[in-house]
Amino acid sequence: MEKRLDEVADQETPPAHNRYESTTDPDASVIRHTGGRSKPRYKTHRGVDPAHEVITTTKVTPGSHDEGGLLKAMLAIHEANTHKSVDTVVADSKYGTIENFLFAHDRGIEAHLPSLEKRRRGSGRQKGIFSKEDFIYNPDDDTFICPAGQMLTKRNYITKQQQYEYKASSSICARCHLRPDCTRAKAGRTLKRHLRQNELDRMLAIASSQEAKRDIQTRQHLSERSFAHAALYGYKRARWRRLWRMEIQDFLIAAVQNIRILIKHVGTSVANVAKASVAYSQILFTRVYASLVSLFGLNFIWSNKKSEELYPMSTLHR
Image (cartoon, rainbow, N blue to C red; front, side, top):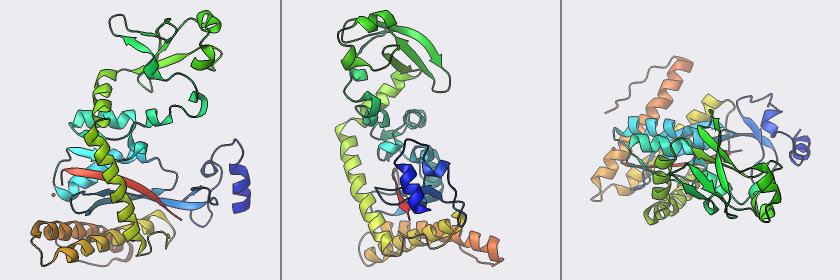
């Protein structure tokens, strides 16, 4: 099966997880990762407190799940566990979607996220052509001016994306001497502008600040350390089949890592870190026990007696 999946992956066909399902673990997605073989995989998403690297939230999904759609859920779990509101969220470009930037804006959260849209520019069909920044937007008459000096006017509204589409005359585009550097579309170049573009621009400016770049760099180190420590406890392997069992595995590993942080700071002056580690570990263990109770009817009693920044991150189990 793996050989067939590898052969199909090299063709221009839908991803393997859209065409194949594991008969032994239907919850897992059949995907390829970093040039390896196509296998059933899960993906772990974590939220980490930057002050002492305490894991405040962990969530498991099938391996094909898009990280960008999980930011709201991760924030909700983090705030429920810590009883504090987030004022800054730091993550990689997979979380840097328009929806997440506007969600952060509405919540009053600074989103230090590389823009997914900007990261995709210059690749695929956009490779070697003018970027959106090469066009000048005129707010007075709501038009764009292209590098050749021609005007792109508002044509359509895309309801699902909440974006307006701007386009120049097809005949003008066809005769333009800059066409090879501008578009490969037969109908000419089009641009999109979001209904809330002004708010989005403010969030993108924050995401491009020096402070945001420093936070993004810090997040990379946090992510590597957190998952490297998890590997000591068998994190890289899915020990059981089915999603709910993988959730138990990740809750336990995260709890052990938080206990390590507690032990590391015992006897030091960082009393708050120890207190926070215990609280987070209790919450994670509580979730595991709740799963065991529902499965085996066991009766556990676990007492549940904070962080302004959250660093979401994701990686795969094989």
